[in-house]
Image (cartoon, rainbow, N blue to C red; front, top):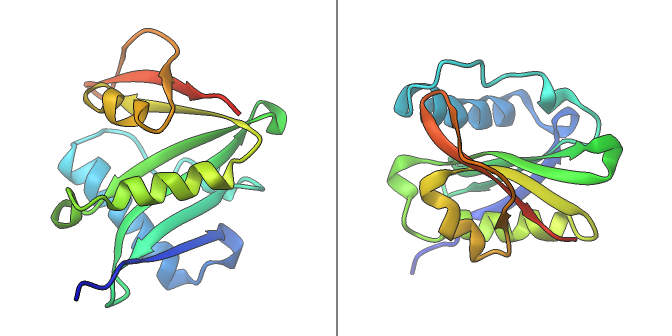
Length: 149
């Protein structure tokens, strides 16, 4: 029997140093190493009041997927970002589970995100619609998307 990864959520000030390290490490492995992005993942937004980290841990306590929820436009909307799944955990529906939990955590608020263009259809399955023109971020095509409250 396969054990379902455990869903976790916390604000940065509630995380242990070890938990934060594992979340930041996964983001670094995906964005900086694998995708070769040339930006600082630690942009200071994780420190903002209200920013919520969501992640899944496997039976060994290893982080297999993560994302964060930011408050935008004076708290009127939410933004999902830093969406990352460990390479060896992809294709198992983990991010779908995590995104569903994030949408539930944003109940009553419009949600914005910037999707990698090749994932637009995947996000559409969760109720997001494209809201603008495609753009490049670190050489990777992205599209802005929004989900109504």
